[in-house]
Image 1 (spheres, helix red, strand yellow):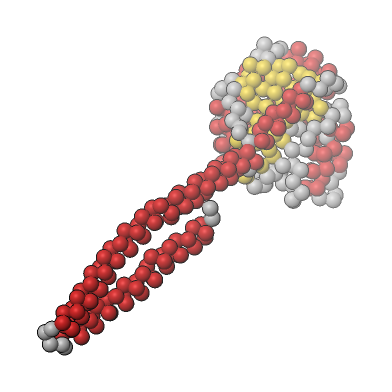
Image 2 (cartoon, helix red, strand yellow; image 1 turned 180 degrees about the vertical axis):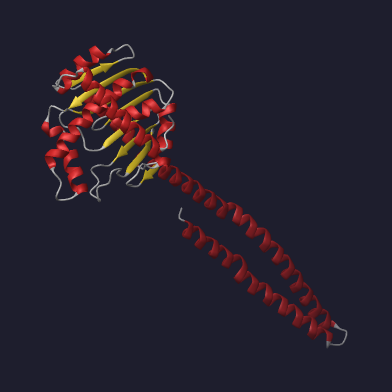
Length: 333
């Protein structure tokens, strides 16, 4: 029951048992006082005795009525008002629990605003989630950040990664447009595409270098990857909003949702759908995967051969990216 209705009932009960009763008791006391005063001015006799009896009876009635009013008001409160108060409290508790459930299901536990540099608090919390997890699922563009995080921790995971297909022009168009908006109208779009292709190759090599931290790395390349980056752990999911229409930033706005949220379940189902896609190309990397085996998978996925010199260049580029990002994000090495 609403609090204002309970307050209104309380006010009415107070009015019935105190305002009106007080008026009656005051009248009795006044009558009793007047009767005593009148009897004192009379000589001893029947009239004086009658007025004294009336005054005494009125006084006794006032005292008894006052006590009865106290007892009745308390009993009425216990019989009527207390159940209403308890019912209101129960309704408020149920409403609070419902809102709390909705918050856990649809609202993020943390919101990190866009920034031009890596946020150490953001990365510290994500690394805590990674260390507690047994599985790490990544859906993004190149996988470079995922590889850096794997190498920065000291646990062992089963990793599933979904990245852009470097052989499909449409796979990088969304990220290219995002970067073009961020850098301005004079941006060379072809140059951006070339750099993005290079990022995918660097990311694949980075995941190969992180294989010792994983029981297995399943990489799926898709032609139409979603623009937003998703990193999912056992008890949380992080969504980086590259699709945010606000001003583009090197590190866009990111939302963290709990395992109990609707978003966590939805993203887990989407990962399953992407990995079940029949026409998607895949790499499987284990701690026992050698460089020759990886080079064969790399050539099949990217369409370009991976020579020893090419591998060395990509490895050096990844370690350069790793050192720069780890220093700015204050990751443990």
